[in-house]
Length: 164
Length: 140
Image (cartoon, rainbow over all chains, first blue to last red):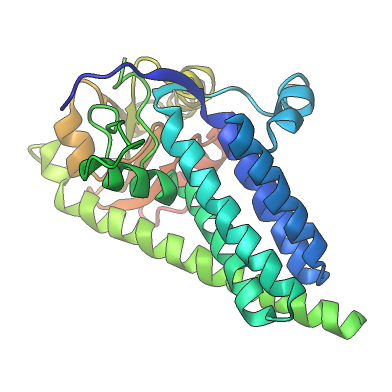
């Protein structure tokens, strides 16, 4: 294992982001509102651009100060999570565009795919986008330089303390 | 319009149920795995319910929620329950064998040493008590 410096990553912020993505996308599907799916795509895109979870302001300004969600800071690489959000943004954008073009089955399938992957991450602790990132880093692709924290399966949420 | 929303709601619920079923299947796999690893912890059957609790020193929710919850359950049940705490950083072999992917994770074993429940993440005392009560060979 290559030695690397891990950073503090608040997994509660990531989880809150995933829960917003899941909730809003399900609402978009139930009420048949492609614009809501497009809004989620936009937020994820902005998050990717600013290298933060898209719904971070909600977590930072509302959920965390009121104690509704407690921080869960772990030693981890933030890059794979950013990449995962970017992948989600790509799928959500493709889904939204498909919906606006009338390809509803394809569009909602892509939206549900993002919901499923976000749910797997939020409830199962497995980040598929992160696993893809680590898989690409094995091929030494430019921009994919990070290795999973020691003792952590690629894509799984790190065990607290293992990377310290 | 309303019928459409109802239909979509039903479809969304169906998709979510399928997802939950998939997650349940994953947990069942973990329980099967735990059953085959019971003798990594005991040389003989415990003859009382056991909670196997995987944690790490820096796990904040373990300290603030999970450990107090386990202490409460232990106090309530006294000697009729055994709690085994495993530091996953000290025993990564056990964490791997038991399929632990995050902390805290708690396994509830019945008196025969069979893993009956697995809780990924923080589990409150009330839920642990419910799970212990539901063990057929155990009455509180």
